[in-house]
Image 1 (cartoon, rainbow, N blue to C red):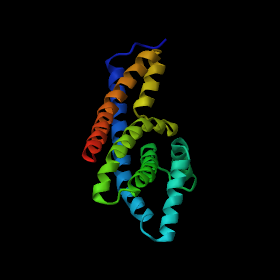
Image 2 (tube, one colour):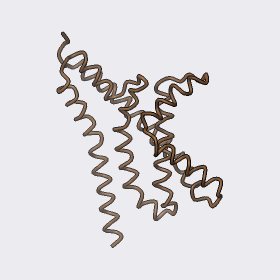
Image 3 (tube, rainbow, N blue to C red):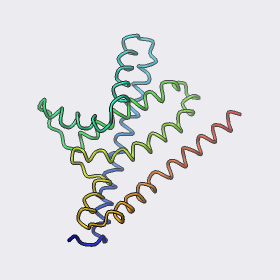
Image 4 (cartoon, helix red, strand yellow):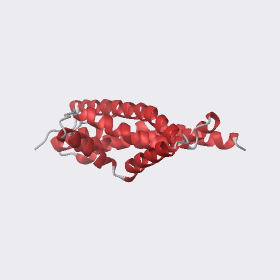
Length: 191
């Protein structure tokens, strides 16, 4: 029989939260940088460059993120490039984010139009935070995987995943509010 959920289990969840936040920041800022390149290439007027980036976006938007993480971690290992789970998922999330953000920003290359894409960018950030739970596929311990480990030890899944859900909520809710605020602010400004 497992032990009860206590301070040690809670701090283990918080260590998973730290990895979730770090992974999100790396993927988001890496995805922003690469996404800008994708958006610029997609609107460059160069037919070859536009076609390549359209295919790139199509691959990352058209395949499951879970599969992308699996391919980066295990696929690169097959060709002799052994990466840590953290490095592999950071790369996978960054490529995925660059495709989505590049497409979001493609229509907003001009500075005044870029503001319009801000709510969608914030919305994608919220999805990215929640999506980090998929990193467990390669053994990376972030918040959701930490919750699974604690749940298996304590046999208290409702309590543990209730706490995990509350942590995700307080991480994502302020960002969602900010995105809604920006969307409303832009709607008022455009009237």
